[in-house]
Each structure stands twice: as structure tokens, then as C-alpha cells.
Length: 146
Image 1 (cartoon, rainbow, N blue to C red):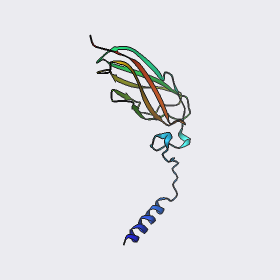
Image 2: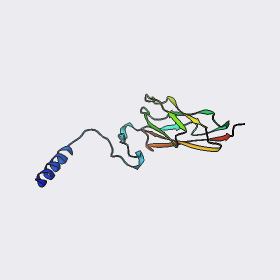
Image 3: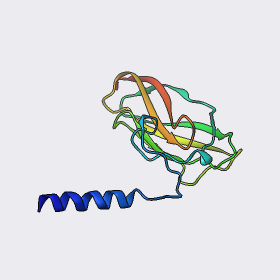
Image 4: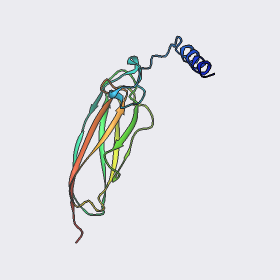
């Protein structure tokens, strides 16, 4: 009985390996475990400000940081995911593809509550570019409440 189950699983596995016209690359370290897009749909992006300094804020203030970019490629730019380095930062990405030649932005709201001192944070951006991942940085100083 056990051999029959193994044989059945093998048949199903082999049948699922048939011809597939989709050109989707296997996940790898470049895409951080997510499915990659095919090479025909890759584009390029220019980060107009990939590092920001928000200056000084008082403990408890919220700061909005905006990162601007331009799609310098020939295919629509799709920002598939933006992840903050900690829970004190909430990122927002464009939901629609960015046309070739067009500009877009990613914002991050940093909550300084309980984070007195120098703050250095980053956002990891996944997109349909050759690099697959870009890292954006921001920093500033959180002053104690008076």
C-alpha cells in the first residue's frame, strides 16, 4: 500500500512537470523567496533620494519620509513589496504599475515614541528590476520630551 502511494505521488509530480509556456523564474536569494518575474518584464529604476535625514524630532512625534524614484526602463515598474526594518515604521507603496519614464514615491511613517537617541532605519523594496531588491535609508535624532 505504501508503495502505491509513493508511486501515485511520483506520477502526479511528473505529470505536473509538463510543458509550461509561462516564463517564471524559480525563487532565489535575489527575490528573497518570492517568485521572480520573467526577464522580458524587467525594468530599471533611478532612486532620486535613497537616503534621507529627517533632522530632530521630540519623542512621540510621527515623521513622514518620502522617497522619490523614476522608472528609467522600457517596461512598467511594479513595486511588489516594501518592508520596514522595525515596527516603528509603516511604509506605503504605489498600488499601480509606474509607466516607463514616469515618477513615483514610497512613503514611510516613523513613530518616534520611546526611541530617544539616534534613529537609523531602512526599507527593503522589492520590484521587477534586475537587482530585485533596493534598500532605502533614513535617519534622524529623537530628543527626549521636556
